[in-house]
Length: 259
Ligand SMILES: [Zn+2]
Image (cartoon, rainbow, N blue to C red):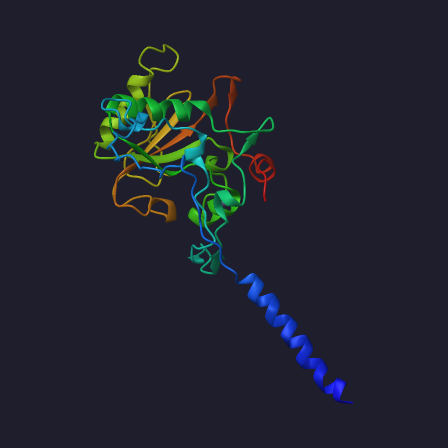
């Protein structure tokens, strides 16, 4: 019986010995040939010059299709818009570029090259930065931004709105005309004078593009909530494929990938 009482004491003493073994410390020794690592004095180094740091016309990043990604966001509040018949319609924004691709043409993300070429030309020649405010819009974002326009070319990669930082927007229109000056087929621009436009300045157009100018109080929407006058560029004719560029439901709703 007495042995049973002593057993726990026996085991506890064993555990105590193990703990002492683990806690045993040994001195850190260094061989005679080993030396302390000496840190060199830091030397100030110039930051590399990136393309956008260069002075002159090329100081801004080249505009690519990446600049055209949909600006929708789930963080945007629900928009309530009064319809023509007086009813209220609620519009929810899309999840933006994290949730879907650009417009796809022949299986590839596509923005009409003339838009990229024109915007890069404007940036180069003016020496001022082009700010794209609305590029590609998926159908949800288009309905959220411009509920009355069900056939916007923003949904098929053929429209963009933008302004040029610290640069007169009227001069940008002249630059667009200058871009085409050497092209016999496209150098002459007409003015569109019908009354159904939503801006006070009659738009300009040649065979390839349609240019609208919105003054500071016109054409405001969630993508263009800024106070600056801006331009809308739309592609009218695909010069590469020699084909009219038009909105179609099929193209808009079936030609982009959702995540
Ligand atoms: Zn979207």
